[in-house]
Length: 177
Length: 177
DNA sequence: ATTGGACATATCCGTATTGACATGTCCAAT
DNA sequence: ATTGGACATGTCAATACGGATATGTCCAAT
Image 1 (cartoon, protein in one colour):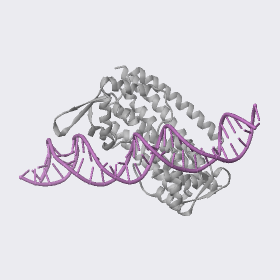
Image 2 (cartoon, each protein chain N blue to C red):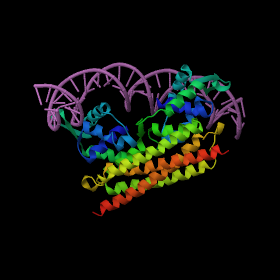
Image 3 (cartoon, rainbow over the protein chains, first blue to last red):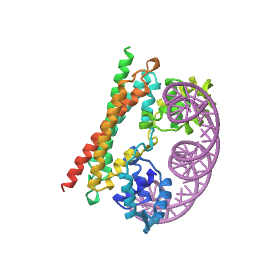
């Protein structure tokens, strides 16, 4: 269910080909929120077109097909976002690895925690670099998806780094017993 | 692949039945890292037992079967955690909804951002309450999975709340143009 | 002229996942 | 005595997903 809304959301920013949409999923979107490969994207686009939520037009070169969100698609997306919800799918292998540190002995856990903290710093650096070249605002004066995602990533990695440092402290406490 | 390691990690803390494992996935684990229902857990336990990574013993009442991790299982888990990695599955409907706010007009977006901030505060309260009754250390002096998860949840929700507040500020800036 | 790489779409198959259905036990409260 | 709810395990069918494979185009640099 979520993939269709991710696609509608991306197309709400600007019309795009399946190829371009697949690229988007390799960035912040796929990093924090939802992943999809072209093999999932193309069939879903066909279905969305079948339901009239997007319109797909052949556009010359290399068989490129540009998909545009329709009024119905926009309405569907808005309804989904406004609808109250909870739970929803969660799957994050990286976070799982954090928690499973509990199964390792102190030395192994420390090694990994240091690696995590360092990795977070690297990612923070990467996002800060990327942000300097980004626009906060997309068409129609709305906030750009990429801007929101970058802001989220920044805070998320800071939180993860702080967690790793805290966990190292907890490990110290445990070892002193 | 990740589910098997989640199960091994839980069983590394203490032996448990499939039913108890399913309960674990309803808590912090399923909230931030990985979800699984009993219908997925039972077959995977059977497979793990078949590979000798866990041992399963019938234990009296109500057909309860208690699963215990073996030395081989512990080794497999450790190897997975220590192995370098990147990427890994990411799927988080909640975060996706945050990003897709970009498709809404200013008024709708504000409404949702306020709701998100409030929700984060509620979750923070809930975790703080839960933490007061938790042990940082599990058997053998290792950090408890639940403790690590709670520490993560705390920082994660703070980050999300800060993000929502920041996004509201960005919206203000955009609207002033 | 050719070639490497980005652009572009598509299918196939095995496995993962989910929701629904099914079955039965134990125990505490009425 | 009975009943509701937690305990406990399972199967099935439909769908989602991911890795591999396939095919072809456009263009810039050599």
